[in-house]
Length: 307
Figure 1: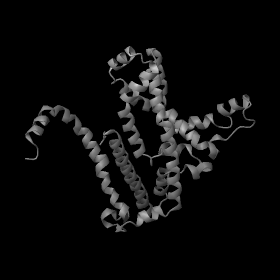
Figure 2: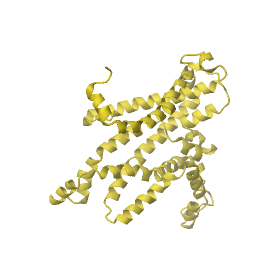
Figure 3: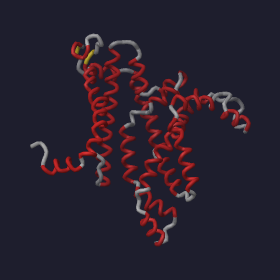
Figure 4: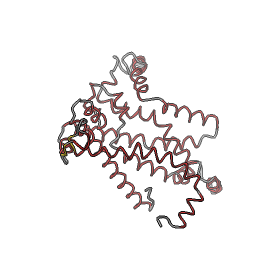
């Protein structure tokens, strides 16, 4: 028998809940697992006319061509720099912000703040890029304010300055994602028993000590899980953002792996389809390895695994 009696009993008991899983499972199989079959083109000189069965097998030749390309080295360096900056700067900010919001006692003001910081999440990167290009243009608000305050004499081309580009990228990422990421921590805070805070207050703990010794440990599992997810996606530096906010003036520091893949796929050569797939597979394998290693480290440190 494939299933034990206990498993069959649980399946029968929760059959309604399992039925709800079927649509999601089908979508996952159709759009996530079945397309994986196309990865065979990584080991082929893929020809759309001949298809997977008729294309010539070349082994790891596509990976050799990817790793020997000067574009790959530059794109990998830019990806690691941008993702590293986002990890260091944008990851802790939602934690700090959720702790600050949790201390607000005016419910209406608290909801207003949460709504305002969450709104940018609904705006696409195309519109976000348009907004910030307008604000940072030579005739934009930022230049006008700095000139009126006599901080600068002449307008600054912010989006074309390489020394300012990474700062703008990290700031706009934080502006757009802060509200969305704060939701996870606010949800985790609501699961902390109120009795813990009451006991701490009786013991004389002030608001700062309650946040440090009760709230932070209470959301530590959420922090660890989101950190693992962000580290595993370190090679995903944000395709939409970099594609819409980069320009020719900063191309050499803004071209990441995702944009390099798209440029490869749109270059028009048949061979480039396999090269783009090889680059994408490299990203997936590295992400999986980082996920396993980070999870293993957390398991060793806290005896807690998320897999």
